[in-house]
Structure formats: C-alpha cells, structure tokens
Image 1 (cartoon, rainbow, N blue to C red):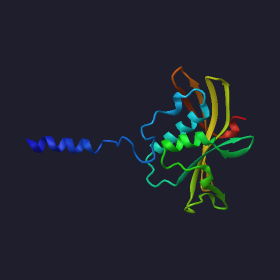
Image 2: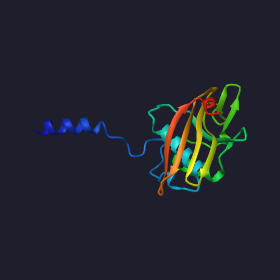
Image 3: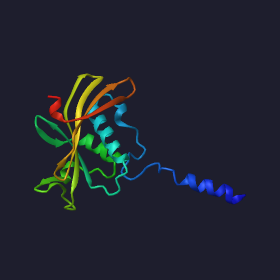
Image 4: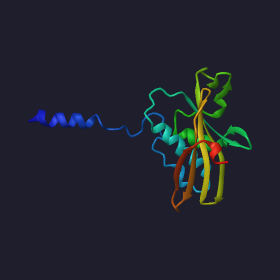
Length: 167
C-alpha cells in the first residue's frame, strides 16, 4: 500500500516549479503596480516574460531604451529596480557593441540587450511602445505593447510586428 501512495507522489513532485527560478523577480511585486513609471513597468513585463522562458544557458542580459534614435541605459533608479528583481540582468554599461554584436565586457561572451523604443503615453493611464532585443548581431522583430492602467496595475497587450508596418 505504501508503494501505491509513493508512486503518485513522486510523479507529482516532478511537476513542481521552483518558487523563484534563477533570473526571476525574487518574489518582489510586479512593477506594473506603479502608475507613474509606465516605461519601467513595460521593461519589467518584457524581462519577466524572457526570464520565465525555459532557456537553459542564458547570455548576459542588459536593458536599454531608445529616444531620438539613440540607445541608452535606463535611468539609474530604474536599472537598479530591475536588477534587484532579475539577478541575471546587468547594467547596460557592462554590455558593449563590438564587430561581433553585443558582448559582455567582463567575460567577452555574447550578450543580449532588450530595448524599448517608440514609447509614448497618450494619457497618464494609456501608453504604447515597442520592445525588441538584439542577441549578438541578430535582432528580433519588434513587439508592439499597448498598456492601460486599470486603477491598480498596468495591463499589457502585445502584437508582434515589423516596426515599419506601424510607421
């Protein structure tokens, strides 16, 4: 009888997901609850999706934003808030563009950089922007995000597309 109980328990234990897998938000609340920083909420959302994926060997990860055609680091407080949530996230200063693409300056290994661009808010409760990433020299398609604040948190809708379709 013990064997009959033990087998189903062992089978179920294989389905348990760790509460805080490597690279995740360490149980900190989502930044989507902060209405006055929608750009940070969107980057948190994008990174949460990436770190929730089942990629086994991740490169160094950095985050950036593009405004007026220039890709720059996030505001220092925003970068710190994200790095507190995602232990595999490095400051953009650690990722450098080389002939081979984005690279971790400490390890000389490839890096992936997530970028927010074309970000705009029509009101204090309705924003939109695009997110993409570059890994090595390969760039992803941009994903358009529309966001609305429902009184308690930002809600996100995504639509993957080629950026030129939007212009």
